[in-house]
Figure 1 (cartoon, rainbow, N blue to C red):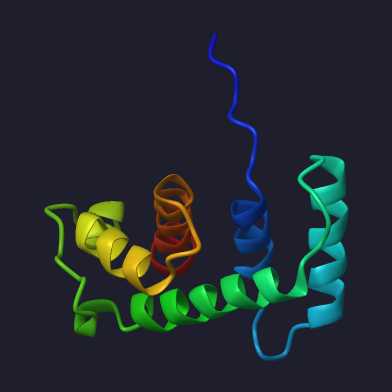
Figure 2 (figure 1 turned 90 degrees about the vertical axis):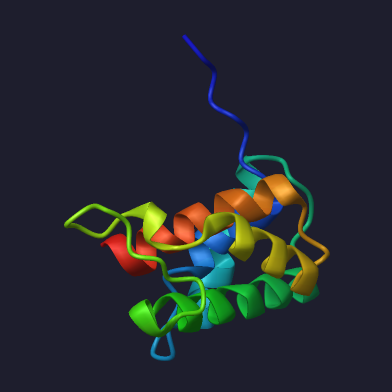
Length: 121
């Protein structure tokens, strides 16, 4: 049996922010992030870091919602929405260059989650 990896600061922030939209209560989402960071003992809440990750979330949301017009879209052989509908490695490199404060492992997790949440659901 494998043990689940401990969530990281950046992934916790992204996973909560991914459900934030224009009509959302930002303070409520930030409160959830603070609670989860404290629960996982990942350090103090950092508003600048959260805003940085919010920018990444906004960029990913816009890009993935372009669907077939996205420069990363490459329809997979599946008849259904699939993670492979996007050029994952290219996205990883491009977003690591743009958001260089996020490590590669976190970025891959964030991209997988973003494609799942914004494309497959």
